Image 1 (cartoon, rainbow over the protein chains, first blue to last red):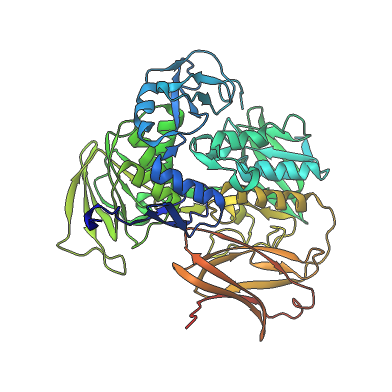
Image 2 (cartoon, helix red, strand yellow):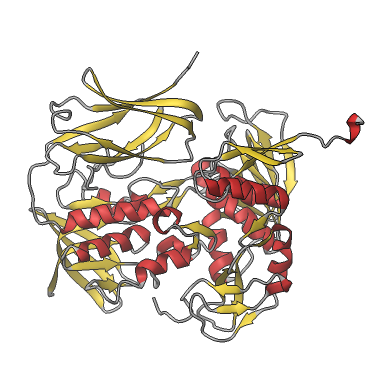
Length: 130
Length: 421
């Protein structure tokens, strides 16, 4: 076999963002898959695998409202979306304007940018006085 | 004027104060919660990013969602909640505290057996770190920039430089980028970032925002509005190196250069303060050296996780509700310069609970370090840590028997790198 065609052994250190431990995980891509070391738990291994194949993130941002007492309200994606879509979704939300007094957990936008994920409100400030 | 009577009064309704008031109420105390803002939740209101509550709830919540878990328990409780209310003076007489409170209804007098300071912390400003130059608009602390963006819905900058790599600065680098601003870079005078590693990863690397360590802002330029900053490399003592200056055009300088516990009210009644934490000196129940006066949350020491802030509030709230006033038999807890600090700074020898919880930060980045706790000549406890970083606070549980705590010698905390060879 020609040596140039063997898949190169790639090693990359990533920082796990699942919990505050921030484990430094060393990932080695081999022919049989991804080998991880340095993580303290299984969630770290799953994160490392996802990070090297299809990185996913939760987007948290704010959306404009029509209410003067709260000109914006905080929102997030209900689940994770592809990391590469963070900017696109954020830009799409610039055109959304909330005109009902939503509770935390209520849907602001369905299936945002075709990701299959909803945007939900994360604050009760539109319904609570305190 | 009528004086209102309470068992426990909590000042500040952020995460620490909310947890403290709920814990005091659960323990049967007649409880008052005083908040100077219109809304409860403290800084969590504007922390719309997620990651809160992983330790406590096993979920990644946003700040407002985390605060709601506590705020939603208030209507069911017996707690009196006063918003838009400000404690203007505290008078202490025979272990009773008399508070003057400015409220929407006018001035009220409150007499309380126990008092809990949950007053949080403040950001360091440009004056406190000696940034020179014009007094133009466009210099914000990261928290102010966050308030503009997340509460007012106004973008404070189109192109900014962030000085300091504290967590709020890192979070704001990502937040401003997503809102369409350009973050030229994050500059840190120290050789390593100040924030959590995971925030460096998900806030800077994800968006290709450059992080420049061992560099600082030496001058602010601009007339009405900031137009550029001067940046220079610094030496090991964080002094700017002449000849390395560069001018970076931008319309805002955002500072994330540290937090300081807010303790003016506590100091006004003579609560002794620890020069390391800048918060009150407390025992394991978060009671200060003044009997009946407690401190918790970021007013006690700056935490990096809200989960620990809530825990500290609950410890204070539960203790404050207890009417028993027995002698504490305090023994000092000290650390050498291998640690930044350790909390609590005192232990009660007469405590019923022998399981003690400590929070500490290492002074330097250490791999394979061993922590030892000694008293007099004897070693009471050792534990090994794979990684210790000053930005990442450690929580430690240690079983200490009354016999081990006998005698007046202080407990000493010490860290040392273990060499296996």
